Length: 257
Figure 1: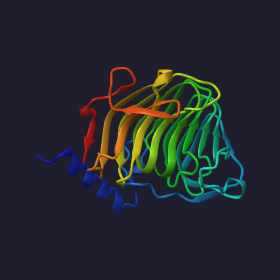
Figure 2: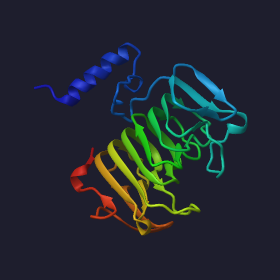
Figure 3: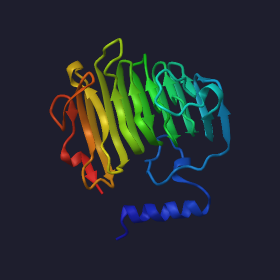
C-alpha cells in the first residue's frame, strides 16, 4: 500500500518539474506548509512607504521588501510595517523578503492567507485592536526574536504554517500599556529546530491567557530545545508544559521527527 507521505512526495516532485511549488497553490483552505518547500517569487517590489490594505488584496506571489525608511531588518522598536491592514482586511499570496521592517500590522480583525516571510525583521506580524486574527498557510524563517506579536485583545488562530530559525512563534504582549486576556490556537504547524532554545507560544498566565496546540510536528529537535508553551507573569518566565488552564495540549499533540 502506498503511504500518504509517499504520494505527497510524488505529487511535489511532479509539481516541481512544472516549476510550481506547494506554496503557490491556493484553495479555499490554504495548503499545509512545509519548511523545505518555499514558493518562488513572481517578481519583486521595493517598498519605501507602508502599503495600506483594505478589503482583500491578492499579491500574486510577488515579493515585497523594504527600502528607504523601511530598510530596517533588526529588532529596533517602533519600525513601520511593509503592510498595514485595516479592520476586516485580507492579505494573501504574498512573500515578504529582506529587509522586512516590521512586517505586517493588523489594526483590527484580519486574515493573512499564504503569506511567507523569508527573513523576519522586527516581527512578521503584529495584531492590534480586533477580536479575531487568522493566519492560514505560509511560513516564516530567520526570526531573531518573535514571529507573531499579539498586542490587542482577542484570539489569534494560526494553522497550516511552517516556521524555522526563530526564537518565539507567538507572543502575547507582556508589557503593553493595556492589559488583555488573550488566546492563541495553533493547528497543523511544522517546526524545524536548530538546536537552540525556541518557543512556540509565550503566554501571560497572570492575565489568564490560553494557548491550544494541536497537530504540531517538530523536526530536527532530538534534544527537545523547542518549548511548546512558555508561561510568563508579564515578562517573567514561570514555567512550561501542559496544564488544564493555560497551556492546553497533550503529548499526543506533539510529534517529533
